Amino acid sequence: MLHATYATVHLNALRHNLEAVRSLVGTRAILVPVKADAYGHGAVPVSRFIESEHLADWLGVATAPEAIELREAGVTLPILKMSLSFAEELPALLALPGIALTVADMATVDETEAAAAAAGKVVPVHLAVDTGMRRIGCEPDQAIAVASHIAACQHLELQGIGTHLPISDVADDDGFTAHELEIFRGVCQQIQHHRETDGLPPVPLVHGANSGAVLGHQLAGDTMVRPGIMVYGYYPDATTPRPVELRPVMSLATKVTYVKLVPAGQTVGYGRTWTAGGDTWIATVPVGYADGFSRLNSNRGAMLVGGRRCPVAGRVCMDFTMLDLGPAATAPASVGDDVVWLGSQGDQLVTADDLARIMGTISYEVLCLISARVPRIYADGS
Image 1: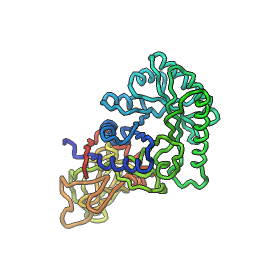
Image 2 (image 1 turned 60 degrees about the vertical axis):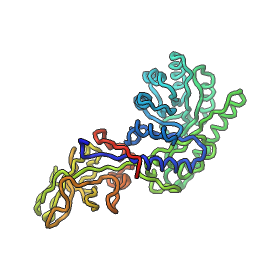
Image 3 (image 1 turned 120 degrees about the vertical axis):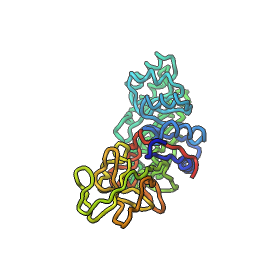
């Protein structure tokens, strides 16, 4: 390998997490979001593994290029494009096999119907219902009319009804999520009743459960779930119930590239924001914000060297970070020593949650920030 910095994607952990999901959801279909390059883990290898191991039933993407990439890579699992599509995207999407599209109102239905008619295809669609996220979706009192409009389209098939839950992952003191689910289930029951009256089959896929809902809410009425972050090994919030153990899927490592003894009173890095309190060994490692180690870790984060947590000294650079190895008569690390910036070394552990706390964000963003220049190694073992 030509780059000392690399990510290991632990496929056994991915398998474990999806088996944990299965234990919670029973026979319901599982859709794994592999958008954003599978949350930074690599959409194609992750999807191929999920498919080959029969760990899920669907994949979810956010953009047309994400769907196209999977199909060009030979992935055959059904794909739901979970976002709305622009008219110019539809021909390329409709040329792909096994793609379901999201619609949200009469206009998006009509646009999708026109594109499907032009392609000479019957296209499965999922109707997004807005129960409180306020991102996309029709209002609940409009859902029956939109669903009936879909049923009247010759080139569309209503395959699914979905919603998204904005606070399913946190302690829900006011019952917001429970009320959302009640509204959603009521809407779905009404749509199913109207279809039965019209002699139409029931809509097979009803889905609203993200990771927070899978872990902490009743799934009555849902026939499919969409767990995201929990598949990759993290609970969506510190307050989310933890009925199953999850294992982080990604670890990140590099090597010491240089070691220098910095005299007391000397500064380190851009802006001279760190000063050695005494004679201090500083290790330089080839990881920076261009790799996904955020500049917000400057003077706050830490990496593991020799089983010790070594603080970041100074500002994180684009391609390098300096670490405080501490005072010692001889250098406590050497060029080529292993460094972990996400994962475990000895009895020490750095998680995406740890980095998220330093950065003032969430584990999702930490993982998605890992850049394409960091090679991914896929390991199906401990």
